[in-house]
Image 1: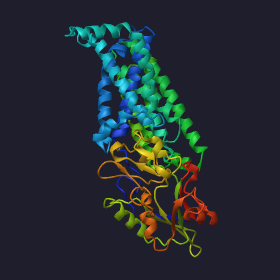
Image 2 (image 1 turned 90 degrees about the vertical axis):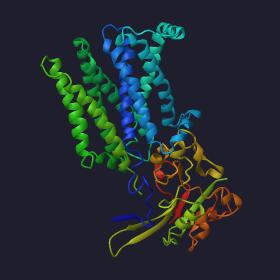
Image 3 (image 1 turned 45 degrees about the vertical axis):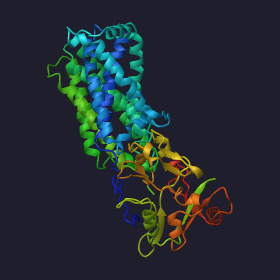
Image 4 (image 1 turned 90 degrees about the horizontal axis):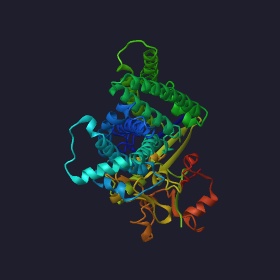
Length: 313
Length: 178
């Protein structure tokens, strides 16, 4: 038997008895960032492919959500900081080894892009919209002329944003549960999946809805595959990684993870989407709402469980 | 120059004098500590073994906290000592989450705080860190690893020693004599 105690009574705020430095802000931001990345990715993708007319919701309507999603996410990030007035220090340096640094810069690119995208499509929402100043007209004309270039930039940066939400965690080798490079692709897939679900939810066009339901189904499949892979990697790794996996395999996070994320967030919507594509009649909103709920729960569970996993010594 | 510290686990009695000395010297806010005592009991009665360690920041040569810091507030100072510049720190918590030793904490003023090896307030004036100076059993050794005659180099040469979680790849510079 081995017993280890801190006898001098260390009880540092937010560190002891177990690390809890990050609360709801970070997982909420990761969810909103992933969702925005997903929506922007599909908008850019179908513009590059020249299918704007076929998928109007994905290209012209759903992106209107993204500036708000990103701003709420950024607000959550700001609230999370302990030294809030110094937040601008993020933008006085670029540190490539720190995911948080290049993530902050990625947001600096994606947020204005999402606003430009909305401005270019504003007439789909307000058909009588008119730019009041001449320079705004010219700016509008300039962006329209370079739409394909903007789409390519947005395509790439939305992917970076989606991957970054996972890499933020996987850079911390002190928390074995986060310390797996599969979190990057996993969070990206989850973000794209919630993005596709949001488009299904907003679309009134049956063809578009079915296309995105199929895309979502494929992404859910990839996500399940990556989750299985993650556990295989953990269980074949060191003692601390095995213990990290056991948080989900019998430990305190077993029920929330397998019930909310895997069953309700992935398996059930997949089944409903298959049935709908087969022609069964059912309310279309159930599957996408479950996917979005599952994505949110996934971020929260990984954020909290990660802080509970640690090295033994 | 490479500053390091060695803790003699055979001499440490866990009196917490180092903890109090640090809090006094560095104005550590009440309720927080930059160093602490860990007591490890191994085995079953009557075959018990005990190890007492005075722990603090490991001033790693490959510090995850410096790597993760988005603003460069966490940095390597003179002699490889890992420090935080308060007016550059945004308090994001990345370094706290990245430290396998949980040696960092958010200061009530917002920035992140931790052991400094008393670099500016004592070591640069030729004194030992507060914890080393005050230790009643003289179980703490401090000095420059590049200098073969420094107390820490000498004791590490003569005694078996270990570091904590070397498998985390941090290359820690806080040694424990066993």
